[in-house]
Length: 134
Image 1 (spheres, rainbow, N blue to C red):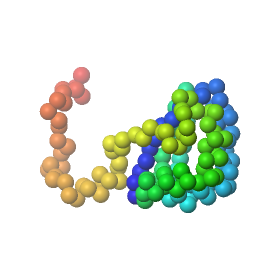
Image 2: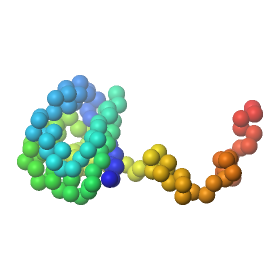
Image 3: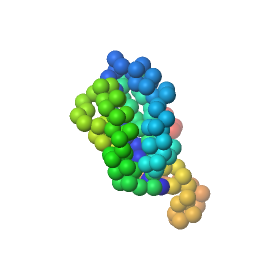
Image 4: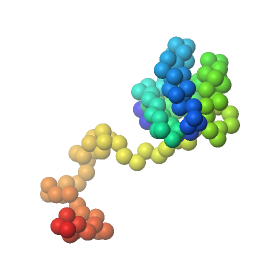
């Protein structure tokens, strides 16, 4: 399963409208997202308009292709287009994908394969050993 996180910008003056449109997404669009293979899909909105999205999928390419060819998704993206800032074309195809740098479950699963350090956490070379004593 691939985890995808992305960002877009919503017009700060239209946040209530964006929230309202997402409070009851069209049933056809919900089914289209589901049939594209996206799971655990969430959107998070900051007061300045920064939108962070997250989903999981078995294949990013297959999911993207499915939605790119979807009539319902095209109509939804057109309906939403006026709320985005700095976008040309479909927002779902122009979103900036963020690099994942940490995932708790992955690291927990890898613990058995890591070398152990006698029950202590290794201190990086650049750490200040007196930091906690000040």
